[in-house]
Length: 288
Image (cartoon, rainbow, N blue to C red; front, top):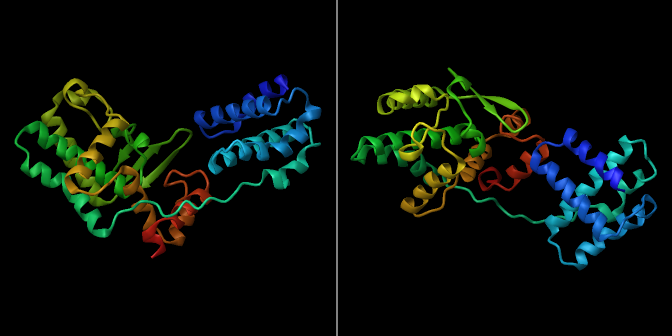
């Protein structure tokens, strides 16, 4: 089994979307081998058929059980590619079928709340007493509008460079591949204004290729996802309702109709249409 696990680790490196996913496959399979005490391939089938029952008895959550079963199926697919078809029938076994989970509606924003969110940093900029606070308000305003319009993830947002933006197009770099999104004339103008204000407030920023920069001890350096969290935490506190980058991203996705959803699966950062469909079905705006 050790030799098979070694080859499986190489297999998931080549056939998984992210480093996190690869790591999880390996952890789950090591857990399976250890818990079911599988030392030889001859023990494999009975261990597979008993695994779900063991997980349920030990009170693992449904989502964890489903993930571990999915990892086990990944291993079965790997065995197929290795020419071992004696366990192929297990892929359709009842014992490996995931349990359904009622996840409920996703947290979202009302139209009124969205309006307040989009106006928030513009109003803060108008009331700012220092050049630094004026510039920060402009930066944060453009960040919020960028997320709303493109449904970009924070981890993708902080990596954006000026060379990724050209007129009405923005190139977004993901963990494995990139995608191109269209940006409106309004967002183009916001970006232009932000760039001009950044060059005035922070002349040395020309040396940085990144769009979103920090101040003080992070002056001129690209911001992190923690900064994005703080931007939205600040809004939540003053607006008296919760707003996150994810909620704003979901609002944007919820506005798609069925045709747009079919075309824009990759544009919104999802590798599989099924994931995007699941998200939309849980969005209050889309269901109404």
